[in-house]
Length: 162
Image 1 (cartoon, rainbow, N blue to C red):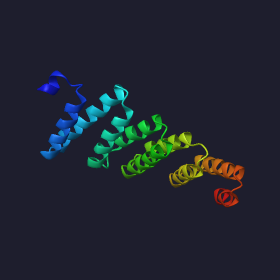
Image 2 (cartoon, helix red, strand yellow; image 1 turned 45 degrees about the vertical axis):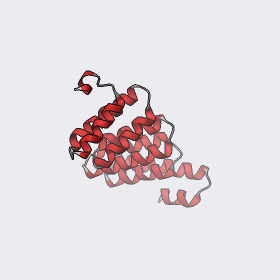
Image 3 (cartoon, rainbow, N blue to C red; image 1 turned 30 degrees about the vertical axis):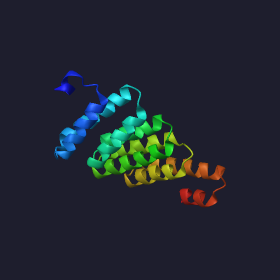
Image 4 (cartoon, rainbow, N blue to C red; image 1 turned 180 degrees about the horizontal axis):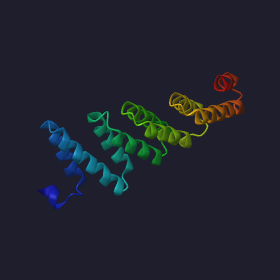
């Protein structure tokens, strides 16, 4: 009843979520935690929203939505490595669900996040190749080779060109 009267009480919403967890009511707990994460984002508490979304992903490891939000928040915080890890996890979740367009779009997000990352470009290229998108694969391999050449990483250049 208190939450209904003041749904913006962060501490109370977190406590209610924890109580639902103790009562083995995971769906209601996750609803509380998701609402709380949204409120934290809205109120500018990005770090707290990240902590709550981590809690959500522990109980819903196969749900893409909280992973996507978590990746985006890491990106906003400038935590590129953490964002990249979450985006790669998101790619794997999309692949498991057969959502190849979403997976590829997420891979391109990683490339935009870190344009000089040859590993990300290699994943784009391999994904495109496996999906039969040969022009996109060739383009990704070429970009990977160009980056590696600028770094004088001849082994990566050779691998990309093959």
